[in-house]
Image (cartoon, rainbow, N blue to C red; front, side, top):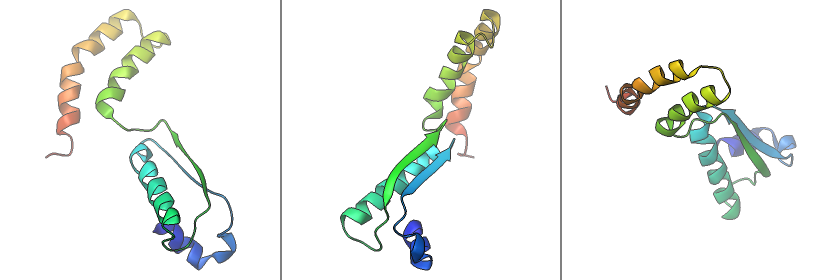
Amino acid sequence: KIPQAFFEKHPHYAKNDFYITGESYAGHYIPVFAAQIHRRNKNKEGLFVNLKGLAIGNGMTNPEIQYKAYRDYALDMRLIDQSQYNNLNKSVSTCEHETKTCGNN
């Protein structure tokens, strides 16, 4: 309801195109915001928001999958050598465990 509240206070912006953008952890909440705006517009709930799109830069959506890809990317881009890649692979199970338990303490 945040965009609607903004446009209620600033009605002169209400007809403008509206884009939602963010990066990193925004990969979690930008899609939720966009879905809520779309649903409210479709159901004619509250003030119409002229949602035109969304953008997420380097979005964090699933660390378990994404973090594994970083080492492959680094090797492919020659940011690290094969020896460094092999050392990173030795740490994968520890990193996976830490990722799963992060925030559970």
